[in-house]
Image 1 (cartoon, rainbow, N blue to C red):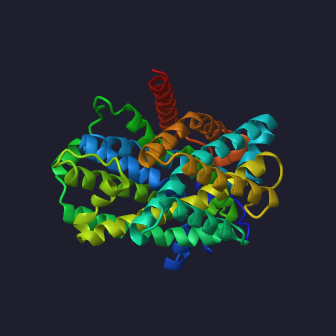
Image 2: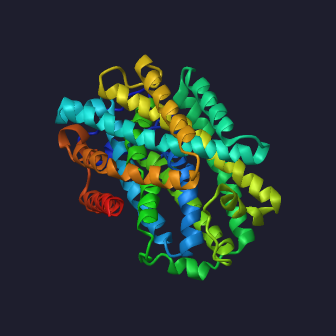
Image 3: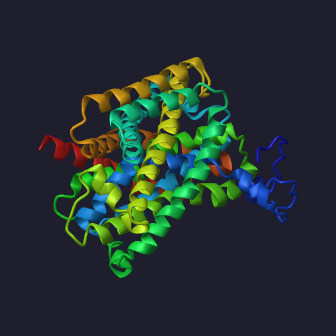
Length: 429
């Protein structure tokens, strides 16, 4: 629920500046159910964006190749993702202008420009997985060439982005898609009957031999700093205030990020239960779909294919919108998806994903994994910017990072830098 009335800050306490805003004067009155539902949105957009075909593909490969042993990566990545998304939410609330514009004002114009270009580069990488996943999924359901379906999906997204108020449309659609996918994945896990005791053992960090690139890909898809960075734009779009912060954290930030983390963990568990029994690997899209066959026989595969296409389609929309918006913002051409510059850049992102898909068709699953892995190379910069900006007292006021925010943020930065270094080492070696 957007706040239109500015509530003056009481002079004495810090807590009074962040109380619920639905007419409350003492912080004791709570929002109604509709009031809380109205706060949901930005973090779910972020979660749905990161839970795309690359996430599904790497999760299935993790379960089929390494059983339950990589579940810890999802748990750690989800926690760190919440930390950085929360920083972005607070920046969206406190900054009088968009995030990249704030970066330019506080840290220099060139820093903001580099951030915008960096996000643009990441969205290019994600666009490949989105184009591949949407085409392959629909070809399994309806037949025909995957490439043709990739073209159809890309054209469909371009059509959607031509409308005004794109963000509001995407936000509502993704909330529905996340709910539907959650039901499907929970049902699949119930039918597949994974070994939950061994799944708990997977919470203990270990690195199986040969899993380095896959771990980097899992981190790149589940600890998606570029998506966290974009949250500030959604918060600004919805006009959230300091008074909304605590409720937004409880009903949007935490559930919006935890939901895709849980679904990713379920995908790994189902893959381990189904493919792990035979020692098989999900190296093709058919193998990926077979993971969900326990849900309802052949219908299970169809449901997975539709889920893959839905995740790819929704992620494609959010990815192109975010990349276009932030690059446009970086170069001073507007921080809204409807600006001419943002629309042009969004079109470039879509064209890149389709073009790479047309050029490299021999190993689509491998292409998705590599594309997602490369995003980790740009993420450290965005993480540092969120960290620095969230610690500026002049900008954040009482919502600046506390000591425990900084401890977890440093752990996240170290993790993302370490995975980047590891990726470079593996690729060069």
